[in-house]
Amino acid sequence: MKNNIYIFSNSVLSRKDNSFTLHTIKDVEPQHKIDIYETEQENVILPAQKDDVFDKPKHIPAESIEAFYTFGEVRFNTQFFKIASYYNIPVHIFNYYGNYVGSFLPLNNNGSGHIQTLQFEAYYTYNRRVFIAKSILESSVKNILFNLKNSFDDNDDLLEQIANINSILEQIHFAETISELLGYEGNIRTIYYSAWPSLIKRETDFYKRIKQPPVGIINSLISFGNSILYGIILNEIYRTRLNPFIGFIHEVGDNKQPLVYDLSEIFKPIIVDKVIFRVLNLNIIQDDDFQYTQEGFYLKDEPRKKFVEQIENRLSTVIHHKRLNRRISYRSLIRMECYNLINFLEGKIKNYEPYRAN
Image (cartoon, rainbow, N blue to C red; front, side, top):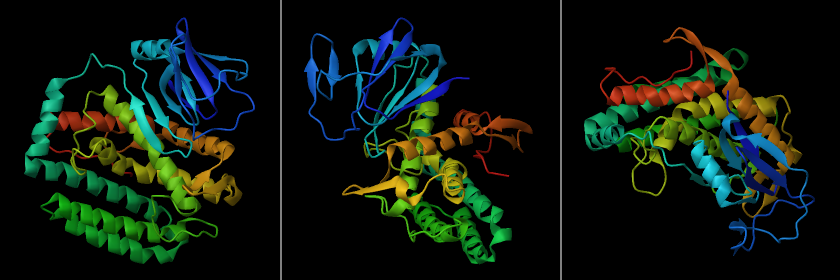
């Protein structure tokens, strides 16, 4: 099985034969405000001075890599991108604070204009678009309820939140417009987050979702976890020939990737949220693992690695898929969801039913 490679330190990524070489810049704090210049001799974009001293390089076989996720400041040369393209390895770039910056997606010669045409048709056929958007949102709500009901036995205070969300779920069934669905989604998220103090077994300052900048440690973990999930979902969209710029809930044309945000709604509760509950309830992440800047609350470097490790553990977790009647990892589940959507767009299945936790 291929692995995601996460790079947190200031590093240089280059090619050596059919492998990647990772040089870590020693004794240099991660940077986030830099001067960038080019050197024609090395054909590399340099975010730091040339006299850096490197640690012993690490060699990573190209065929073992699913995708790169880079944080801090990383240098790439053209040979790196050539071999990344040859092995179809996406590179997802985040800034020092864990915010998604962009991705390098190799040219996909297996891309399907047919599937993308079907996406466009579904988007512009309003009733069909609403049906797909409603199916995604209903599954997202079911997965939110799964989290709440799993904790219900330990906390009767969740009864009101569960009842309120179920009430809105009934209204979603009869929604006729995307704006209605977005309104219901916002209301459900507000209720769901109001229940989090009951799900987290320690004192928190969390009372509502604040994104830009994230306020408090829980908002910070939500933002960081969601950013990683967006990269993972983009990876699967890329490999299954869908177009990330054609979504159904989120609007096309805002320079973002609507389909990534759409599918993330299904998996945020059962991947990101579950990891947040785990790292806080088991004290894997402590209050002093965060730093406060003008950009908000952010994880320090070592705790960030711990959090990503828990995300990877969650993705590798194998569950029993009730509808398929077989065991499958969450990572494979995301790719399967992309194929599920493709099969619906192609008319191979009559009903589109995104994954719902058992």
